[in-house]
Length: 258
Ligand SMILES: [Zn+2]
Ligand SMILES: [Zn+2]
Image 1 (spheres, rainbow, N blue to C red):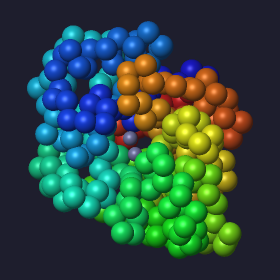
Image 2: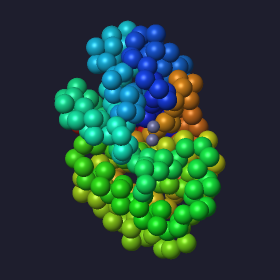
Image 3: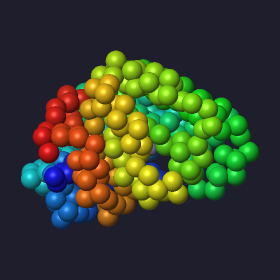
């Protein structure tokens, strides 16, 4: 099984860097080098001003052997996400793919940043998980996304709830299914302290049972992170019995057998 699509990439990295061929071509070059044929550029919505659809068209013209999808990762940034949502609505017809994610919890806490372990230790972990999944449900129901990113990101530092969260997860997965969204399998979790795929095997099994389709993703913030650990992900998908992957063109999802 060879995975050919990476649907979570950040050409701008962690700062505003307007799209240009100089910025984007290395992503196409590296994708081709490692056997990717279909990639989605999904910068954080707080950097939407750097996204340029004409530059994406130029990149497509220069790399006709690759499918290059125009996307964005929409989150719940307390400062920027209102403008991000407005931008997604305005540019919906030019976008192929919108990821939905949660990066902020109660008190505008950017919980996944390096060094936030102390705050995890200080808070009530069950409350943190309940807050996180409530926000995930709201994002899934927003009508503005095609796919949920790193669904259990809240485990990033390895803090686990002590309460049972099965019912909450089932409600989240029902919401995702009812909204007809896909869910990504993100290898980023393997390079984070938790050292585990996003989402967990348990969530993946429940998602399969619910009928939710999957994309494959690295969440690369540098072009060399594209397709990271995809051999390992292919093994995992094979073990879990996932025979196909979802791709998107202008928000239209199709399934490709692997
Ligand atoms: Zn994210
Ligand atoms: Zn991301």
